[in-house]
Amino acid sequence: MVRVKGVQAGSIADELGIVPGTELVSVNGRELADFLDWEFLSADEELAIEARLPGGEAIIYEIERPEGEAMGVELEPPTIRRCANRCEFCFIEGLPKGLRKPLYVRDDDYRLSFAYGNFATLSNLKERDFERILEYRLSPLYVSVHATPWEARKILLNNPRVPNIVEQLTRLADGGIQFHAQMVIVPGLNDGDVLDASLGDLWSFEDAVLSVAVVPVGLTQFSHLYTGKSMDPATANTLLDAVDRWAHRASSERGSAWVYGSDELYLLAGRDLPPTEHYDDFPQIENGVGAVTALRARVRETLHSLPRLDGRRIGVVTGTSMAPLMPDLLEQLAGATGATFDLMVAENSLFGPTTTTAGLLVAADIRRVLADRRDLDVALIPAECINDNGVFLDDEPFEALRESLPMAVYPSYDFADVLTSNEFLPDNLDPIEGAAA
Ligand code: SF4
Image 1 (spheres, rainbow, N blue to C red):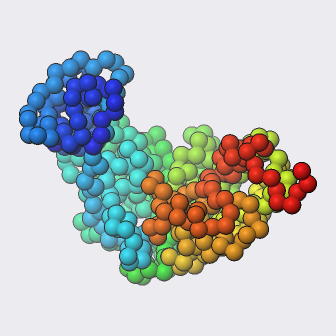
Image 2: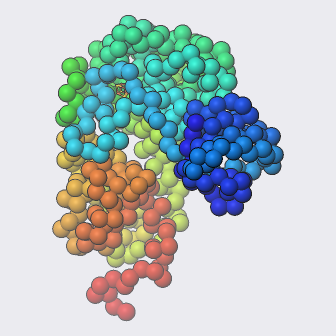
């Protein structure tokens, strides 16, 4: 059974009389366990939907659904499948205490992997899950492989009962499922020969493995389980050498790089980030692979569309890892707009200084660098550090931060998203204080 959270006005569900709180029990005689069943089973044209209204009344809706018309039902969120592993490098184990509860949920859910691109290890898959993945063709899946040699993977996931990932992927690939894989590298455990063997195994899946990301282990000052070595520049360089070897082979034999080092790996190694064409269609940009290169390209493409902002002073807040890359971008923005751009680098107070990514900054970090900057007209902050509900990781709402600061503050992904918005049209700008009329 799945429960309805909301109904779109004027939709099929609305016309049928389905209301929030209605329980959807089955479709065409098949019971509904979750949103996947609903999405796939209700895609038929002729439907018999067994439901229970909030008052307890049982009802069967028999309808012919016009092709392409949505049912208009929003379901309550599913119960998340929990992770059965205990990786020493688990980011959730590295969270400080006292944050909001959902942040501590260690999800490992193939359904979210298909629906939202969350990475899953597949180590908690039951027979029924395999059947559903194959029946509904849940493809591509995003899989945390880390290592294909079974013993190495047991150690990495800290789980002696973890299934053999090569067998799992083989069964799914034989059924037509494709994957994006990630390898989080713990020095001494899955670099060197283990990385090479893993990439060899993934390569042998041919077009079932669409891309592989090689990501350095990310730790915070609270990663209390971790007993391994931390990533250093020499190891990052060795990893990138291995990535380059496989990417070179993939480019010549299959026409795409196929395996990519994450941006963080290049920054740690002190190497230049590859150009746009290296990343093909940026298959793992959400995983921090190619995000910097994509940002650089976006800035280049949008410079001509930016308004003149002569005399304005704009603050740009970022984390310590992006700081060395920013001056070049800000210089281009200044040239195109006439504004002065000030870079402000914030350290992460919640996770500690080893956490350098801009997307994990919290409201307190941003306030610390902006509170006294009355000379700024505008501040741009990383949009990635605010969730869909408008809240930072430290639970402070963006609106509260914005109201507490002396300048206009905007979350931004790529500068142009803010600087080309209506507020920055010349007619909508406030006059510069002290400027001649
Ligand atoms: S698989 Fe490992 S890293 Fe992912 S949630 Fe589970 S314990 Fe954490």
